Image (tube, rainbow, N blue to C red; front, side, top):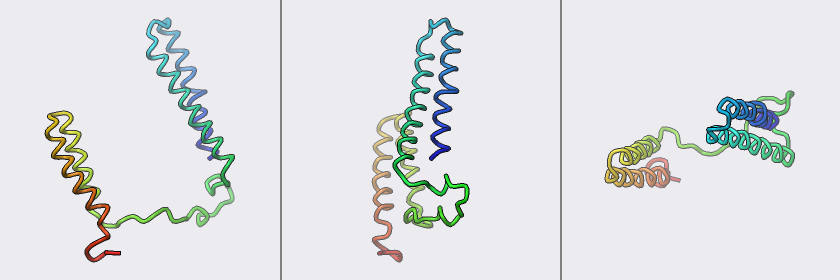
Length: 134
């Protein structure tokens, strides 16, 4: 996690902090929202970088951090993913209908929520029926 730590720390300290100071100086500190937002972004970068630094001290070194690591060292099982599943597409369509309802009329969101429940149940219970039942 060395690279991620330095990226976030540099974003927070080297980029956002000077930009916030320059922005505040350019506006004579009369527009405090922009400077405050930039300082908060700097704090967030330092916060994430500090968390990654603390976490990297507690866990073993990852293959990404070892310059002599082989490709096989990083090859571990991440999880089981359903191949050729249509349910995520239907779930994304339901989410699009829900957001469309927020923009146009809330009653459309209820229709999208119904489609979303059906799509989510279909995706979760996909391997409990049919040819691929476990």
